[in-house]
Length: 264
Image (cartoon, rainbow, N blue to C red; front, top):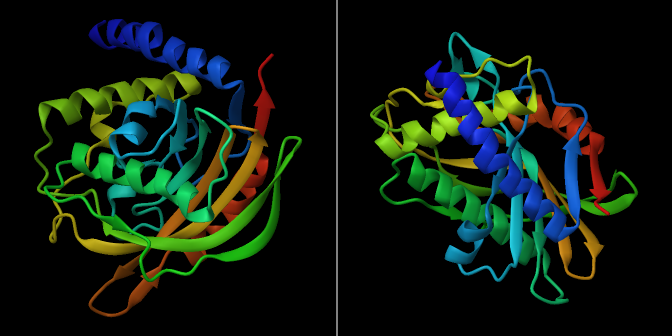
């Protein structure tokens, strides 16, 4: 009963807020094909304040994302031995205050702000995300609905979100909200907040590299869409594992399945 009431609260507060921002921006995203290694739903999140907090001048911003599927009661995002460890799949829509030309690096700042905010929420005492030393190469075009964007391959250096296994009250509440948003996006899901919380890491908030795809779309004079999907480069005592090599075909197919739709 409590879970049902909480889900109704989330549905009444969070979903209408995102829908309002979608109408304000004038566009929405829909991922039609989510890889089986990921939760089969999307969290839709108002990320405007996060972008502004990190100095990005946007009028509105919405983030759509999913993470590693649930295995043995926990997301594989937090399992260092799973290909989905620290993997993301999703996209941003942002509306700028006025028509402005953004560099490729400007678009990447969205992901940097988002990642650092996420790490802070998960208890990282010194969140860090940097593209310094990384090269981004063009990988052709990518079509999403009636829009064509430029696909890039690159990465960043950052921290894992797996810490000491003692989530704060704020994180526990936010994980419940995220779980309900997943369930609202797909009624067949039965996600709980505990499934979206990491356990204890041998090396809390370890530094690692994320490698993946970014697709940039200029859909209107002051509206940008950035799709993203990544794996992680993980160092083990025996070898270096690059999970992007395992995930990249599915990530690209998912990004190709995304539709950018104009809201009348």
